[in-house]
Image (cartoon, rainbow, N blue to C red; front, side, top):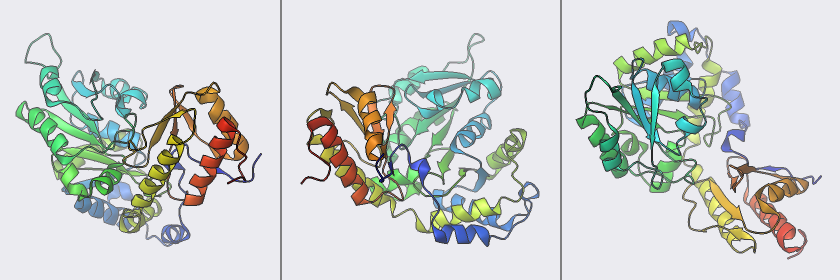
Length: 351
């Protein structure tokens, strides 16, 4: 096994920096269920301000944030419109159905977003036979669509249709700060059209745990009760919140480094025979590619472990690699040399 270890499976693998660990260790604590943890309160105030919402709620994860986010807009038996490639549909253990008694109605994703006409057509008319359409879920950036950032205009076009029909809009913004950096806009421009948004602290922003749900004050009070119902009252959670404050204060702009490493990786892969990738496709930090060589996707991912490179064979059809905090340019260069040696036979040490 190679001494190098380059883990590109996900940006959830980031480790807290020494400065973040220090902030966590020194955090002022209280009981958050009683609203008495001052560090949690500061994080929630900061998050709400950064995303342009009235209030915010610390939650354990993006999946929990999406679940609480959706059920806080709904009643049992309602319907939720989402993309057929969305995270909330594919990877959240049917939580909306199991916990919220909600029916998910997937419609086609087109370049990561939903088309307003498709949303309009999917919203149910008032009829005794139909569930009530209560929420439209969007995702930014969009994972399965290749980390594509969704523009404010695209989000507003969908939100305008939903709001005109009395339907709320929830944004799975796990990587919404990546979208803002890629598009060169204030993140509030991307969240202004939606009623609620969840974003992850524990991906590119580098915190070890946690996400934040943002919305109106009245909505967050409903969400707070739903969080308690789901066992999410975390008591002395200030040490988690301290990491989140550090992330929002210092880690957002550096996401551009991950995007640059993703472009470097994609451009290098495009030059290797047996790899199929559009080098201009990665807009953020997610790199997906096909393996046309006989070794195949799973075979390449398996062989790369011999070189200390770990990645996901996504859906058994593509490989996903995700540069993140802790992955340097030299790690990307090592990865490219390893792929080249496996597929072409050029030794890793050769130039």
